[in-house]
Amino acid sequence: MRFYLIFLILFTFSVSAVAAAPPNILLICVDDLRPELGCYGVGYIKTPHIDALAKRSRIFTRHYVQAPTCGASRYTLLTGSYGPAGNDALFRRAAQMKTQPQAVAPSMPEWFRNHGYQTVSIGKVSHHPGGRGGPDWNNDEQPEMPGAWDRHLLPAGAWKHPRGWMHGLANGQIREKVGEMPVFQAEAGGDEIYPDGVTVPEAIRQLQLLGQPGEKPFLLAVGILRPHLPFGAPKKYLDLYDNVELPKIPHPDKPKGKTTWHNSGEFMKYQRWNRNPNTDAEFATQVRRHYAACVSYADASLGHLLNALNDSPAAKNTIIILWGDHGWHLGEHAIWGKHSLFEESLRSPLIIHYPGIEKPGEATRAIVETRDLFPTICELTDTKRPDFLKNRDQLLKSLRDPKEIGGAAVSYTGNAQTIRTDRYRLIQHRDGSTELYDHTTTAGETRNIAADNPEIVARLRRDLDNHLKPKQK
Image (tube, rainbow, N blue to C red; front, side, top):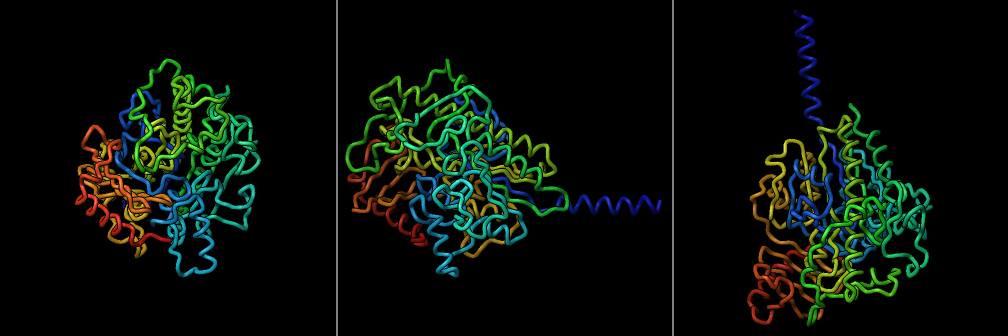
């Protein structure tokens, strides 16, 4: 009897200790991913693994990034701060750490590393895959995020180095002359013939090393490259869309007046065989099908990773965050790419699962922004927040209660800033001109009503300025 009581006490203690262990964090960053997924109500897109994750998570249907470009958006994700608008944002921060270390707040991975977590990144998490500078982005002496990671990895495989991997096509093809590289491609073969097919297996290997009983909790950040340009994915994913009728492109015309429209330079510089999707409907459909194929390839990559997590000891004690670094125009406003301040560039998927989540699978229409992921993760892990993250609970509130109504989201480029509220989007240009759009109308972001609504413009300008007061220069 005595032995039984001792055993019961020890067993209860061990179970309690496991239950009280800090949760792990699996952060999955997907490049250029539009919120066009099955779980977002878009039936023709084939994303079974993302949809399955969504059924046990909170889906944010109005999540906005801070900048419509990879580097600046990831800066906000990884620092919890508004920051520079360019792709060099994190390298600028790294340079400041050398000259003014006391002026630079710790990054999210650095904060968790200093609070007992193992931190590992694989793929494109910061702007440079693997998180290094140099001509081929593999120089250990030029970290993009000093002090952030215990390991930051980019197995480049046949693509030789991170720069080659970043814009690679099938079987090790590296972008040397961009005008000679096809804007889309679908070669027959397994997942491994395209870049994500060599990094995801490494992410799985790292997952198997982490989260073992008795080990530190982990923050594992995995960057999935597709659907970033060029649109290359194994042909089996393109085949999914052979007989699928795509919906019409909404508001496909170039906007009038001063806007953040651009000529889709990132897209147009690739080999397009002298075809323009704005004037060639058949070519536009081809582009959209190849983009969809890349989304399904990304979904399969996520599926491999989540299956490995489900088979690991960390399965029941891991927070999972799926985050898109920005949206992507597929012909809306006659843009093929990101870099605008329209809804298509700034709205991206955000799906969060955590142990014990209430009302799993329910979506929230609360307006939230990437900046508040850092404090939210601190709360979910019971980790102390840095002082500069206090009083930022909007995302957390809507995560816990999908009926919670969000406030506003701020975004910016180098030449303009915007604020999105439940009803309006205001865009303020550097020269003082403004755009105002009413999202309760069918016109949406095609009719600028700023001239007719000076009081609303003035109010939203004040709100925008108040939000951006802490913005780092």
